[in-house]
Length: 127
Ligand code: FES
Image 1 (cartoon, rainbow, N blue to C red):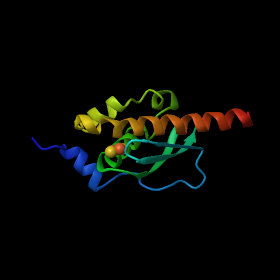
Image 2 (image 1 turned 45 degrees about the vertical axis):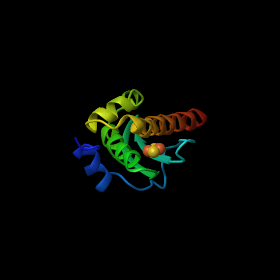
Image 3 (image 1 turned 30 degrees about the horizontal axis):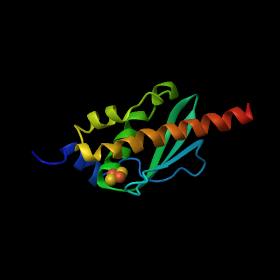
Image 4 (image 1 turned 180 degrees about the vertical axis):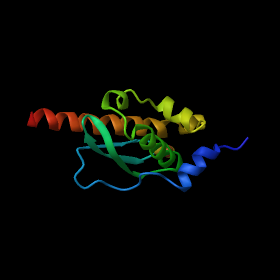
């Protein structure tokens, strides 16, 4: 069996939602101290839903594939649902990751949560 699923390879080779959002409502940045990879998520929120999402990932292929898949999974979704996205769901959507690469999908979960929390913190300050 190949080490990586076709879905992982597809999202690695053709990542969706790469880039930045200049006037993002929430930004989340996380890193993994062990491998040194960094993931940054930008959210545009409208009516408590993800109107747009972009990512920048300075990391391995699994991290890029995880960010690409995770951003696809949260696009258009209400924030309440976005906050429940787990790395397990991202991994499953990618048809699996090798065990030693599971931490790459954890980065996606953490970066998205951080971006939502950033949005919520900023909104509290305004409201
Ligand atoms: Fe660290 Fe993939 S090896 S994020």
